[in-house]
Length: 145
Image 1 (cartoon, rainbow, N blue to C red):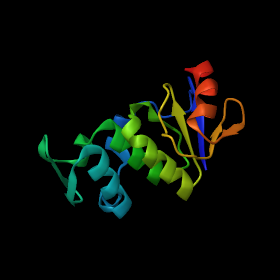
Image 2 (cartoon, helix red, strand yellow):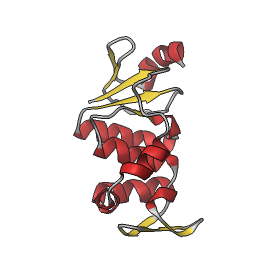
Image 3 (cartoon, one colour):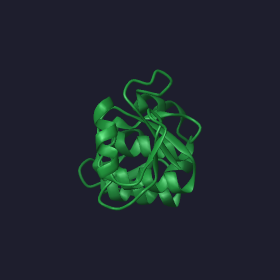
């Protein structure tokens, strides 16, 4: 299940780009799920462990991926660590939900992320309440961000 803590959370990894640069593993990049996220969010194709073909930047290293994709990959591969997912735009929200369906994860948000019009299960740690739609989530998140 996906759990979210809104607002300042000292134990969360805030600078996900630096963290990613120092801990990512090549196998994380070539994982089929990561490849899908990279293609969807960054419109880039993984050619190998160290090379990604970006339509904007050309051939890039994994550390040059967008902050959103790097954060998604971290969330997927280090579910025991809490990451500040505010580097993620709305185009990452469906992937955060999908990761949360596969494993228990907790993220920190300092902005309102749009999880879409569908239904979902998200535990808001600030209140302990489980919400199932943006209509339920927005009033709670609005208090904290």
